[in-house]
Amino acid sequence: MVKVITDDNFTTETGTGVTLTDFWATWCGPCRMQSPVIEKLEPEMPEVKFTKMDVDANPDTPKNFGIMAIPTLLVKKDGEVVERITGYHTGDQLASILKKYTDQ
Image 1: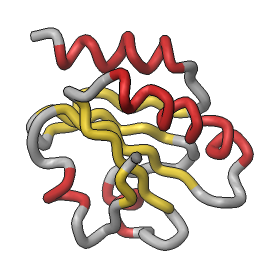
Image 2 (image 1 turned 90 degrees about the vertical axis):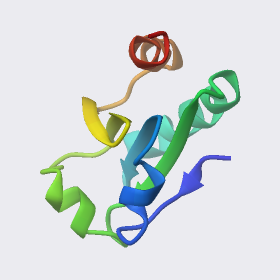
Image 3 (image 1 turned 60 degrees about the horizontal axis):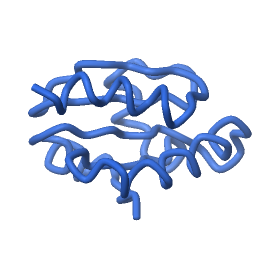
């Protein structure tokens, strides 16, 4: 299950390893399309930690990263943002991006 995170625990939860954070909102149609793709990808990529953050309930982290559109996905490796993905993407597209950081 993709872990729901908040402004308070974002840094801790995404500080080590390869993480993907889905910034989303309940009212966002493309976000509702993206979420099942991420849910399906998670068990296929146990080397990646998958998280999600509701931007309405947690405005500070999206603001700090300049997130202006959702869905936006941030890929971090050892706490540093290495990839920023905006808009809907397929599982194959996301897996390809993530493998750049897990196959090293």
